[in-house]
Length: 584
Image (cartoon, rainbow, N blue to C red):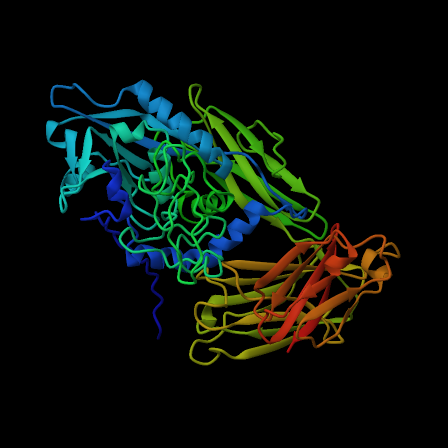
């Protein structure tokens, strides 16, 4: 018998405190002590597919996606280190001013920072002039879990090199800790710089401070080296030797192709003069937004934090969602449940009916009377709409993964009556096998197909490439899937809609099929195009999604797709139709 175990990789990312500082040593001022370890680089690289999706959403104007522009509140615990007698240390006014500067930048990444439960004063002369080998002793006694712990010391010194540091941070996957020298925290750029590391930004000169970047000036390798962000130009490492006091780059370095570097001396993540660093790029804002969504959105202050639970039910025409507040410390609530930046409810536990297909952000703002914070729950509501079909039978082709005992399914009618069901299947017998079922269905009826995985990892792709496909009586695909968590559903309306059905009257077709480059969707309704299309592979994985604004959008380049069969789902209001094609 196979035993399921769920493991979580936990590693502590060391902060590499440099013994020598490359070009920037010439500035004779403390610099950043953060450097990405190989483990930190690997952590980010493993996240890249998920990060790219969030980054596309950051830049997207997709009409199908209801995207909130509300700003999520991130808790910060400020630890101000003073002498044992309680003297010295950053003042509260200096802290508030530094956080205001940082919030001005990070609003562009839809993030803001607030002080969690006030300031923690550490009156200990041993830590006042902080050395990095004291970190464990200090943080173990003072860290607050699930917040950004920022420690402000009179000075920060590398224990290994003796060099002074402006600060350092741990990239994603490491500790929730940032160390700051007081004078650097108030210089207008370094606090934002270190928080940038916390949210996954390397230096613009790359992940090493001691070697020349491999990123080329022409940007051809920008996704695989340097800072892995393509709208920040290749940077040979800036400093006072190659940036003038008026913030002009005067270096003469060239890359491996012989092209002269043209770096950005204003970028906050560079080693440029600190007074020059006044901007992030849009790509950097998108990356920080993505890191927050992928790895940091569960941060919570003990006394006030935002959270909720959803419970959804749906039929062929609508989706009903009950929202239950599970926040801490809230005495008032404001809900934007459809991502349009308009407050829909002010009760604690509202319910909402969605009648239009889409993927919706939900923003919940709470207050305890003195503090108001917001959290945006990214794409937490998804209403897929209903697939129009015309058939006397529905066929199920189900390929199981390596844990068939976890898989069950059922087909129900519009009255929620159970018509057909299957599973759990037999371990050791049904592993990786394909099950075929045929369901007899009536016209003018709505049907729901539900597939469940009891472990929560779907049937693809953790333990085999399982999938399911529903087809009509002519073996024309209705829907496909396989990659989900605990549950996946499809709703089908069989001959329910009348002569006004958009897809009945549009005479859709696709050519050429097969294709190795461009496919074109043909419709006779050129004055009223579908709203969107989504392309899925045989495993039900989303490959591409795009809004349709003009006829040219119906010509789709599939050259980069792997060979195989794909399904393209077209959407118009709450109606949809699926076509299939082969990429060869």
